Image (tube, rainbow, N blue to C red; front, side, top):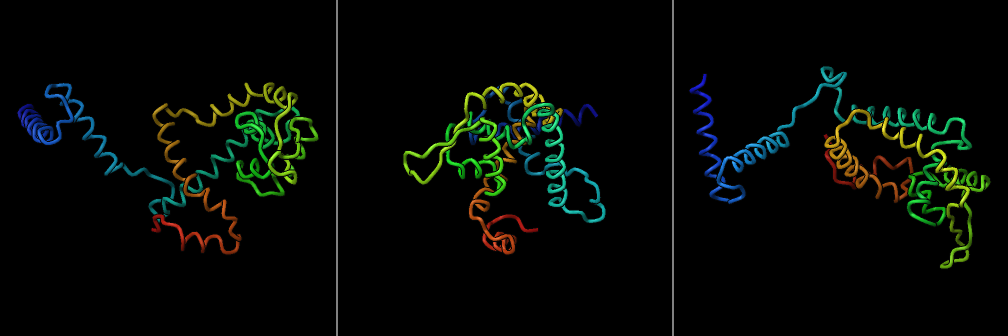
Length: 225
């Protein structure tokens, strides 16, 4: 057993020396050797990732089905925590404080810009904005660029209402990310951002619901298994 390990290590050292002579990416010492081994393992995991088990896999359930179900479930869990975050407050829905957070972070914008920022239909978005106006949390005025367009911004009262709930809102967002490590959070951000960059242009086209799936399946490049 010990001799086999020695042989394996010698073979690894020989491979390291060969690779490093070609690219000179590592120091020619034990630290360079350790870094090379770590990179080889990472590359192998990326090329041959361990396939997880999921419910129904043995009966042919696809990974796409699982991903869709998990995203729906996570959205429902997040909404549950959001409801708790605004319990006993003047906020009617989680969208109310999300709209205010966007206005606070990004500044004044048109109603449609805010609605699109939150990936919602115009009728639903207008109801939320009107509710915030009635609460005195946002105000609207004519745009300097186009008098026909209204620009909305968060008011002092809106900032105060948001600040009053921010501690519970932050706690809710921390709970949603569960026990993920920092590295896992960064990986998840990269994956979800990739999906966001795929879907946002499609959403922005306002394709009719009846033909949406057919249009996307025909026009957009993605893996069709």
